[in-house]
Image 1: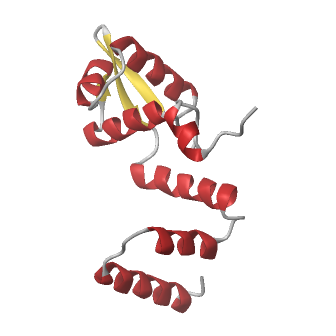
Image 2: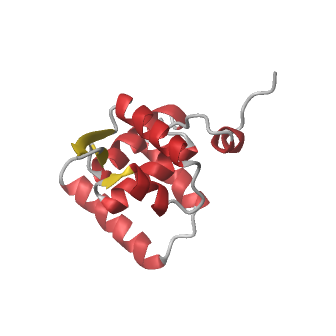
Length: 138
């Protein structure tokens, strides 16, 4: 049996290192943008949505995983993310760091620097953040 490559894994809907399938990530992105929304509103917000039933099923899965909560609003459920987007991002970065970079911040940052086109002003801000971390003893 062939080993899954990262692109194959992302394309066939299996969970990636951040714990989300491609569709779950799309739903979370829409929910973060909307802040709170019904399944119908999330379905509407997706560029190439699966069926409405699939969106509802994925929301149930995300709720069981602890990523979203719902409240009743009449006959419909209104969903919202459990964690703030920034907190969820930090958690995903920690998972990626541990999974792919042997828990090394240096290796993670080096991979970003070699894979991304980074504007000079962003590099300057990164250098300032590194200097600040050094001053703070981190």
